[in-house]
Image 1 (cartoon, rainbow over the protein chains, first blue to last red):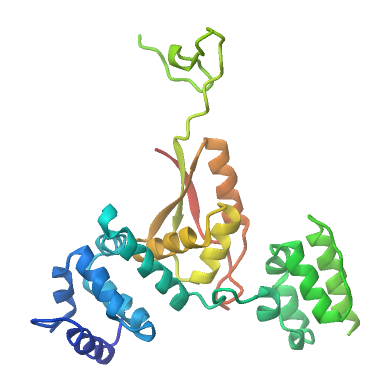
Image 2: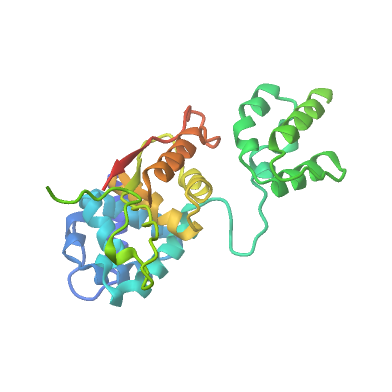
Length: 168
Length: 113
């Protein structure tokens, strides 16, 4: 739920994006059809898209809002729906930008955390659910040598990794 | 008494033109429902669904938005045993390392359609 200040700020911002009467309260957005809502979302800047969705969540039930964001499942809205979700994904997910290489182990278990054994051990499940390619790459960079664990060797790789961390 | 629609039963429609008996495909009449909570991030839900349900990143993200907004989302359709397998993967996936308060996997259950 947005704070009152943010809510007012967003309503003023959104009112400036449409012709005719603007939005005095969040519920005024409910009068927009699915298509109108998606078209409005296209005018919202990336930096405000998260706030926009939070604002919408305060104004109507989750089921109805989700249906609207899905274009009410009308074929003619499909392009708008795809465009909305592609943008919202980039705003919400912290991990990757298009084309950017990303190793989740390097982001969430950087080598400077190896001194904190409790922290490292708490990430065991996270380590084990990575692909072996991700793990090998992570180990290569962490220990400055080539690693070639095979498919399905996650547990073996973890035992090796833990031993190396303990040696430090 | 009417015919029971049992798994594996052959119907006249499922037999080939030669009359050779073929096994009916198992009915995909089960689903896996994922439930919302405040202990998992969007990143976690997307990562978990792409792994456990083999969803594309885009579809997993839509499921994440739906579960956040409505409290639940269907993430998989299949046979009962397939759905139970998916459900087990979700329940075994582990906590979200991004949130200190996350202590367990997300909750899901298998339901008949």
